[in-house]
Length: 269
Ligand code: MG
Ligand code: MG
Image (tube, rainbow, N blue to C red; front, side, top):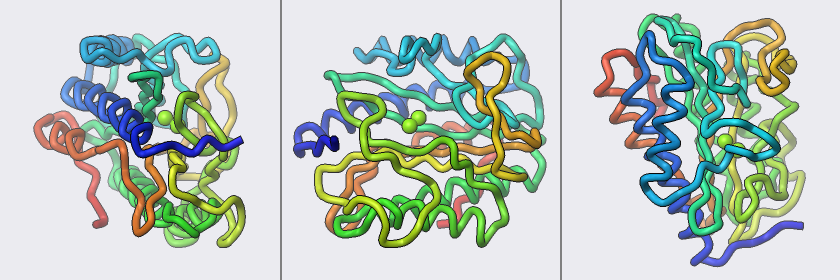
């Protein structure tokens, strides 16, 4: 069952998404060698609660934290730990909030100074693949058009592995609603995109093969070959001419510029 949202509901989801991005900005200003996942998780939770929101992931199916923090070979769903971030790490951070009963959801992968050139390229290709998917989130297209665009760019054009086991999703009063939004697929396949459809598009792209496995903590998904994996996510409302991106990464990119411990991913647009 797909819940199509009214304009008013879309504005509430935008509010939740913008609070997610504010939490990301807090995190982006903090990340440096020696800081831990637990520390940035705490700061993100404080930011969300200070602004009247509730962390969306904490307690969701028993997840214990505000952020999913998945370093290096971590794909998604990593639990914050007391491991200190190091030079050369990439850190995928996923965050959700609930504001006025609606969820927001957005992810970004941060690169500490010293990240290998190839891995920085993985990040910018994954980010660009997200925007290529978003370009297809318009009325009259089908869900498969989104996945096709992401897969073509990340796999065909750049030779990376697009993770199949985890997918994007509808967003609303539930964190994960129908429909599923795979990051692979065929043009013209799947449900027709209509106004009022709000979805999280979230390519997970591996530098090596697309194979993943669950790590021993029962949560973290890692790449099977232990090569780096990147994750970028926006929540978007399907639009007539173009999608309305409800989350916004501009503030994150500003914080990265101001944080000498982080490397900027090159934007392809
Ligand atoms: Mg997410
Ligand atoms: Mg999501």
